[in-house]
Image 1 (cartoon, rainbow, N blue to C red):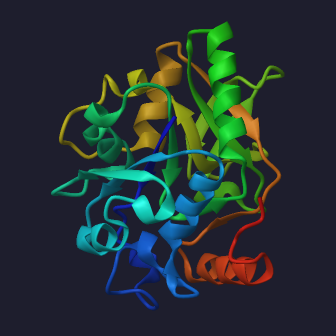
Image 2: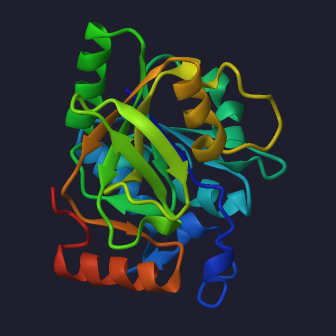
Length: 242
């Protein structure tokens, strides 16, 4: 299975500590955050990675090149203007062959992505209406994330992005998706995966599934999250917890 990483964010909330590179290239122990994600994918047997790049993309491309040094094959989907999470993914549509993993380039989740992907494919074989599976986790305050409601069969029945929600689960920034979820997205326009693509999929009758995860989760896009991830890798052998 291919993995797509949204690595084009500018990191405006990190400008006080990161002003000369994309957010995904924030350094931790002399290597960028994105490298931790790619290493985790490689450890779980994911060998094809699409990097969606935009802001200061030369930092990403010069560091990772074709990915051979990490045991993966990397190709790049380049945006010439900010397209949002949905637009960046839509821009990469031609590079996607089948079911794929999607990771936010500014969050880290301790997850066996291969088992997660297999669970998605297995459920889709039983129900072809399944077009997405979302890794879910719990946080103390869900207002900064996408709040998710599930039924007893883990089908998602409600998805609200960054609101004062009472649902116990939030999206943890890792997805298993079908390319068909992007068919309705406008080409070369900015739109949001969280606010546009996923709610539209539910509205047209697609099945989205939740996959609860207990592993460590952090959004590095704030100074507080940045500090939490640094502490995590210091205590877990550079993030190699799996």
